[in-house]
Image (cartoon, rainbow over all chains, first blue to last red; front, side, top):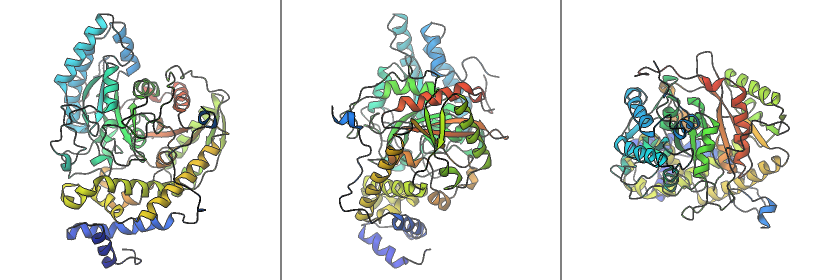
Amino acid sequence: MDDKVSRSEIAALVKWAGMELSEAQFDQLCEAYPHAQRMIDSVPRDQPRWDELANVFEFPPEDAEQ
Amino acid sequence: MTTDLDYLTIAEGAARIRSRDLSPVDWTQHLITRIEALNPSLHAFVQVTAEHALDQAGKAGAEIAAGNYRGPLHGVPFALKDIYDTAGIATTGQSKVCAGRVPERDAATVRRLKDAGAVLLGKLTTHEFAYGGPSFDLPGPPARNPWDTDRFTGGSSSGSGAAVASGMVPATMGSCTGGSIRTPAAYCGIAGLKPTAGLVSRAGVLPLSYTLDTCGPMAWTVEDCALMLQALAGYDPEDGQSVERPIPDYRAALTGDIKGLRIGVVRHFWEVDKTTDPAVAAALDAAIGVLGGLGAEVEDVTLSPLDDFAVSQWIIACAEANAIHDDTLRHRPNDYGENFRYRILPGAVLGAVDYVQALRQRRELIHEVETVLKDFDILFTATTPILPPLMADEDLVSILASRGITGAFNITGGPALALCCGFTDDGLPLSMTLGGKAFDDAMVMRVGHAYEGATEWRRRRPNLKGDGP
């Protein structure tokens, strides 16, 4: 397991999420969690404040005028 | 031994139905017999609605005989991934969580296909709730690849890919959150279209991710995908993402002429960002050569690294899937298969800020791709960098760590078409992807259709145990 997050910290996250996992399920989550951590660490967090969320796609200008 | 009804495409079958050379009942009965022979080894169907299908086929035949021909799907059999609601027919998402669930209404797409006269032949294997897989702890076994039954079909529309490739049915519906139409299309050697987000209704389809899910057709040829999309496309107020747009004549767009079209090749997706099987890379280079030979102008383009798309796609999908499954995951975690639970649980501990940042990253990526597409008609890239994996090689850790190419077009929302671009020496299919501008689904199919017409790949079929009468 990644040494950035301990089992006790993951246990706290699970409790916060309101989940009750069996020992085997918790072991699985601990095994999978480093993958989530890598993803989370990879998300850019330096966007300008006015950058909004995606709306899936943007209409071409000619459509917006209609 | 095969018969002339094996492997009929929609276009071929429709022409014969229209000319009264083939009755919908005969075609449907033939496919039911074929499913009985092949499904025990391929596990593509979870339920065959034979009685219902024969009844619908009989009505279609009577209508056509009376001169009321509805169009190219009239009397044509199709099948649905088992996440599409079907009135009076169980729809479980292949999960114990939905065991015994029988919807009262058809999904909007199912209504549209039935309105076009198509004949529902049954429900198809899927990864649990269109996520995870291949799994052996679900209500049914995973589908197997018709080209090599020791290999994975790809997913999550696993039965949809296997059923078309094996000729059990000419057309199926898949769904796609990160590649669940295009990956099984690639591994099974067929065509699969993820339409533009908002073009095809998702109402009545078990959701996985509200902002990434897309419903689309899978068939042997691009032309058949176009025929399916013609019936499927259109505004639906019951789907919050649905968009009211003019619907073009998709089949008429398949002119075979791509002279002068500009194709941007996203080569770094498979040459730099992923480790790609040499057979895949060689097939992609050959395909680029074919497109150039047809008169297209081909040029390499650079987008953000694939990981940027993959990170955004994973966080959004995982967070939204957790929101959808929140209650049952909390109270009935044991009712999920191990694979689904393994994939989704990390999302339960994602933060709200992580999700919002991923959505903001998504906007940047959409803008970047739209800007590139101002100079090109379509983008070209790999569908998957690897060959269909052996079932035995699939393990939870490697599945979770793998970041596919397909998810990039779920992030953009634009159309993406996977189609066969060759075979390995061992007879395993290879695939390329054409991605387009939002609502220009006709363009990706135009190029894909021209490519299919210029190559021999659609003439090859798998050698199946149990094939024949």
